[in-house]
Image (cartoon, rainbow, N blue to C red; front, side):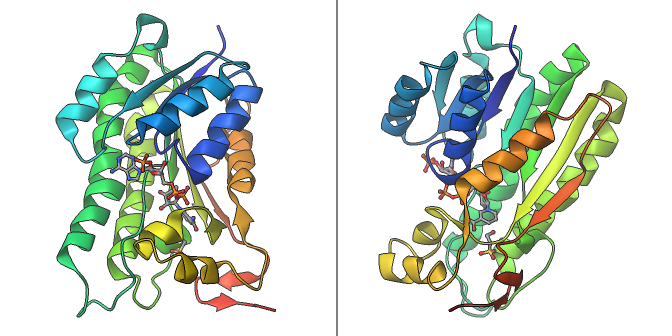
Length: 250
Ligand code: NDP
Ligand code: 8X3
């Protein structure tokens, strides 16, 4: 049977592009997100290439995560690849001006949500004695930039968890990789700036930002290496971006 991938945050951006690319490469899909209409549309579109099922849940709700995964149809119970992609930034403020609700959201989604999903799926991989987990980190998990504070902390946690998973799951033949992108043009900045479209557009103005498909292609490359190859960690920037804060704009 073709491999099955479980993708969180499949309704938009990197997760959606990865779903499309995987589908066209005969990878069966379990697509997750909160926006069920988008999941239904994507299921319809990608079913011409592969078998697709969807799960609607908020990664912050641990009971919902566990219940949703328990309800998977029998033919989707074996999960070969987990893409821990759901995540976002909320706000871009100094530590002294940060909003507590924004902090909660970033820690709850980017760190605890990733843990809840992993906790539900890892036992299946252990039982199978095989599996692949790809954690979507960020350059914010490698460096800290002004006003990035809690988002950077959440992605530093993803970086640490990526290493921890690889160590703890080593004996079970489970590969673990992280991809750490720089600026990718998705709905990310819309969310960070709470729907301020102008501010969001400006993040990607004056240079060629990475596109979601660029990251999807890297994820696909990582998960299709031979069984003895595990890319630990991969940092990818747009050519115009030399560091989180050094961006050459036209
Ligand atoms: P998008 O905003 O386009 O996509 C985010 C996805 O995460 C959506 O599908 C969304 O689905 C899902 N999601 C968000 N919150 C929740 C939640 N509480 N429960 C379940 N799903 C949730 O952004 P990107 O594609 O850019 O982001 C994907 C990942 O890439 C994130 O982890 C982000 O931190 C990381 N990243 C992004 C970069 C960028 O510049 N864009 C750079 C580096 C890393 P829904 O709303 O339907 O629930
Ligand atoms: C998203 C990239 O630079 O906005 O993780 O943190 S950045």
